[in-house]
Length: 121
Image (cartoon, rainbow, N blue to C red; front, side, top):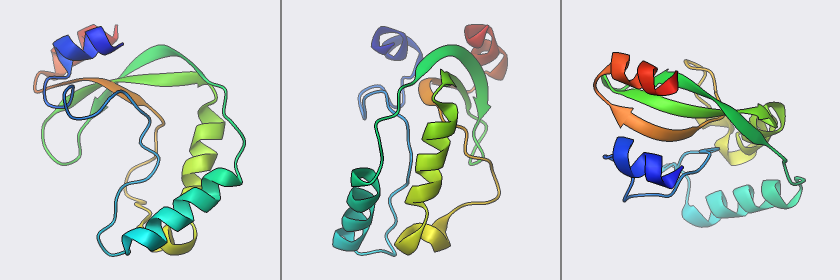
């Protein structure tokens, strides 16, 4: 996965390792409160077994970027439910309802959507 990212995820490959984003940072919440909430939710959660065998095209809502997403076949619901639990309490007002949460690991980012789709295929 990381070798694919080195070739196809140029904007982010050296910024962060492959991951599921479950909650975004929020400047409106003090870091200790944010960290305490996320830690409490995670401590109350069980491990999520997942398997990813599917790549899908993702489009960025902020610009014209296209993404190659690896999406879990197994564990999708568990990851989605963890996301939902994280967006309770202090994070509840910041849940974005304008786009669905699709659990994924981004492994490619580019401007050419056709090229991104070809990589998914």
